[in-house]
Image (cartoon, rainbow, N blue to C red):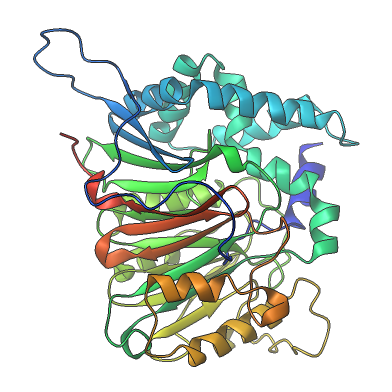
Length: 419
């Protein structure tokens, strides 16, 4: 049953992309940062200090979790601060199974167990700590950790009918008039989990680089994230170019990306990690630091580090582009069921149209342009969230369509030890 579930998942998008501005409450974070709405553990009266304290902030409706300490302590902080959301999210997943033919709680548990057992011990400790203080218990926490895979499988027929995938775009140098590099990204998982969208900032005390991950409550890995050294990355599905089956003897790639961000200070160092790691499926991981961007076309058999499309512009969707693969370039006039070719053509054209003017606001507008109007944003209800990042400033803007309009999160305020 596990193999069947995994093969279902392979056919769907685990994507990242670009969106439009829409309705939603909240505004940008102020210059002084956000005000904490909760902390854990609470500091006892007259105590000298708290060795490890987590805090929960809100950027509009978006959870911003700032954790510090050992990995177990960070997991305990996570579970305590988002206890209600984690339990509600779990109940929603289980209740949703009732309407999906061929899925059962046992299937989810089997996959959750299989992925968990391949996690490095320190990441297991985050899940263990979360399981303890949230009241979920370990088995439910394992299920919740893999929620995006379940949703991908559950939405497979709907997503294929919609032609949903993801997109990423970076501009710098002549495209920003020598302003800081700006990155835009769409994550297209459909109408799922808006109320659980969470930016989690991990500040470990073991010497690892502080790392922020934007996912959904209970997910301990990275599909979109940035570290304290200003390295940003985001994950797109790449199975169009490498249809190899899910390799269940390998760790789940988003967990590897968490580890990569905890260790990389620039793109060169990041490239070493990709060169020595084989993924469970084919992916396209787009990455940037403050100086430039590249695309890692990460097949199950190896990786190509694809350089920019032109000096100062990188666009990636869901197919490999590096000519050294020997894969004929797709024809935009031919079959393009997920619009991967069209989205790339559109974004390259928008890049040239806005050459010299890219900044965060322009990038928001560009990635929010609907596919039908010459962009890549998929509406309604296909693009789950959008991100715009400026690595040099350790800042990310987030938008969740029809739930939360663009909000700014200054990660520099939350990396390393809190006051």
